Each structure stands twice: as C-alpha cells, then as structure tokens.
Length: 71
Image (cartoon, rainbow, N blue to C red):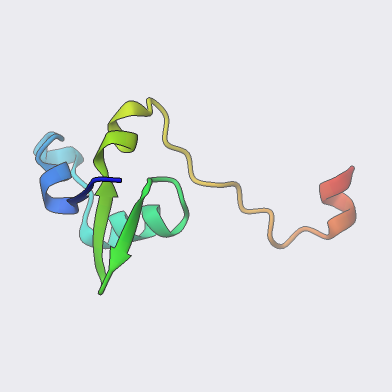
C-alpha cells in the first residue's frame, strides 16, 4: 500500500471538485475510499483509488431490523 496525502490526491481534480480534509476522512472511515487516517490526517491508497472507476459509500442499513435484512 502506497499512501498519498489528501492534498496531493486533490491536485488530480479540478479546483471545484476537490474534497476537503473532513470529506476525505469521512470517505476513508466509511470505506468508500481505500486509505488510512493517521493522527487526524487522511492518506489515500493512491494505486487502489485510481484503479477503481466507481467509489460508493456502503449502504446504511444499520437501523433496519435483522428480519428485514434477511428477507
């Protein structure tokens, strides 16, 4: 895993499409983006990030009863 700072990854996006530090942390925490948060700083696994064409947040089914998840 080669980790790259969120600022360096942001340079790959147009200025109006860049994520904030907080947004990067949320994306990593939700596992939508591969990376690590070290001492509050988001680092992105650059190779895995750019090799994926779709990045989705995991679905939030936490508040559904188990029976609904199985049906």
